[in-house]
Image 1 (cartoon, rainbow, N blue to C red):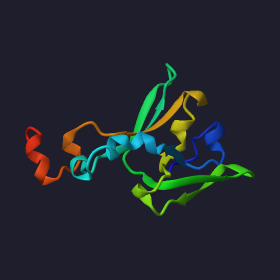
Image 2: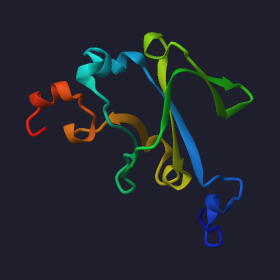
Image 3: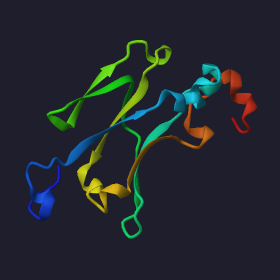
Image 4: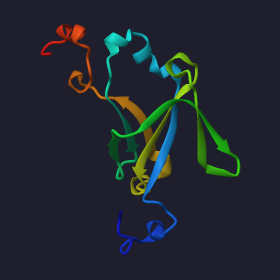
Length: 144
């Protein structure tokens, strides 16, 4: 919990939460990297959510490894654009719904720099050392 005694401006407003959830959809067609090969070959890849500010002078990237994802849809209520409900698809990988990702992030980072400079994405970690590879396939990767 952050101290509010020295906060100024928007962060001094007690109604602004210290943490918000960013919720976004990953189109199912973008998951081909996982679905185009056998589950035995894909293993359990390590993923993360990246929140970036792209405007020079404000640029940063924060990486979050703790997030929730499920297949489904986001439903918004027209009376409050800041809230949504997630309707989960019980068929999961066998269904047709997009992947919905929800990630808690500190509010402060979203207030740094212009709003239109913020980019959010879900990414696969780029190392064979940070994912589970089934034993039957380890001999095909050098050093494992």
